[in-house]
Amino acid sequence: MLLPLDLRLLWYFKRTAEIGSLTKAAAELGTSQPALTRHIMRLERELRVALLLRDQRGVTPTEAGALVLDKAENLLRLEQAMKDDIGALSGTIAGEVALSAYRRTVHIRQNSDRILSSIRPLRACARTRTRGRTGNVACASAKP
Picture 1 (cartoon, rainbow, N blue to C red):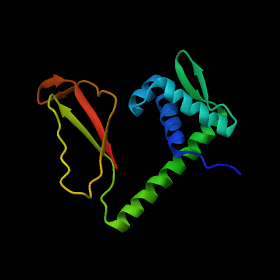
Picture 2 (picture 1 turned 30 degrees about the vertical axis):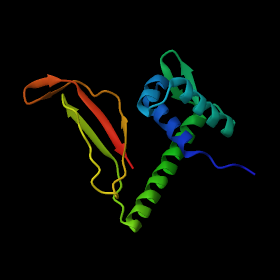
Picture 3 (picture 1 turned 90 degrees about the horizontal axis):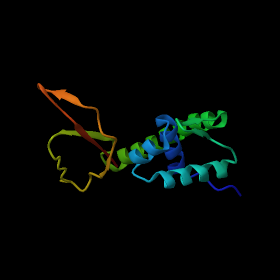
C-alpha cells in the first residue's frame, strides 16, 4: 500500500524551487539548510526521482521536478481551499496577513479566541523610502 505524501514536503520543495536556493529557502521556511535538504531528499526517495539539480549557483527543477511543482501547486491550493471552506463553516476567520514595521516593534494581541496566529519571519525586505526617510523594513507573516 502506498503511503500518502506529506504536504509539508511538497510545500518545502515548492518554495525551494521557486527561490532557487536551499539556503535562502531554509531561512524563509524557518529551518536549517541540512534539515531542508533531508526533507527534499525524503520526497525524492518517496517519488523515486530526482526533483532538483544542484550546483554552485543554486537549485533548478529537473523535468520531473517541474511536473511535481505544477501538481504540488494544485494540491496546496486545494488544501488551502479546504481549510478556508471548513473555516467558513465554523465561522473562523482565516487567511494570510503580511506585516511590516519601519523601525518599530510590532505587537500583535489576540483579542479573540477565534483568531489563530503563528508568526514566522520572512526574508528581510529591501531598503525602502517612507515619508522622506530611508531604512530597513522588517517583515513577518502570520498564517493560521
